[in-house]
Image (cartoon, rainbow, N blue to C red; front, top):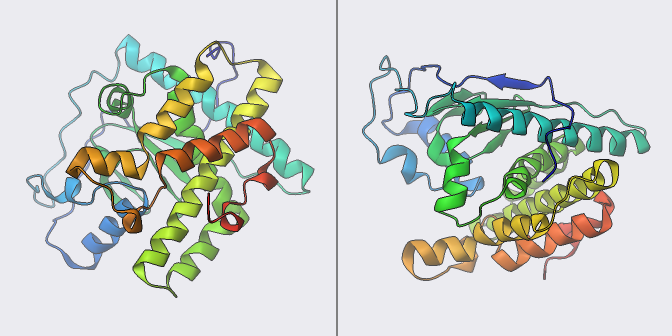
Length: 285
């Protein structure tokens, strides 16, 4: 991926190395809300609570990575360029519709972070918080993407950021709120299906970004598309569940199958048109 000459975003907030106080994890409404957020993001809520819980005034230790290292600095630079690309893409899309795109912030952190959506450890993975309109990512996730999920490559990493920005677009358009309202009116299986549709649309929006970034800056190199498709496939619910317990339970999917994620990312990158990302009208794919 040709990213080095790209514009850098000014919306990156670097909290790496900061120590924060973790909340007392003893159940209750707060713990339940955070677990629900993690579940909707496709993570495993138990990953947060299975660890020894520090007291409320016990700081979370820094990530063992050296945040000031050359590798980390390069990754932070990369994230800034991808974020800037998404800003350019979506600002133009909103302008064409007579709207103004509100640029989100992207927070880099290590180990754990406090967002307007609550406290989260890096085990959650990258996530978007609609309450503060910020994307949160611990750069160590990219190591997991390469080793744990077998999805290496810089374009695979860019896809992850573009997907989370897709959730921001959904938030601005009011789609996220509509889905949440509907989820409160149906059973758990139906709520999961709505979550899948939301995630697949974010995948499609990530493809829309890739289409426009390529047209404006020719960012793609040989193998880049395959990297992103591999990443989309690697984090499909069916594949992750089979890896974890040997079988998949479609009724519990919250992000979609590998095939679905690949299909909708392709839809976005081939058309470059957000209007073609109506996953809610295509519930059989």
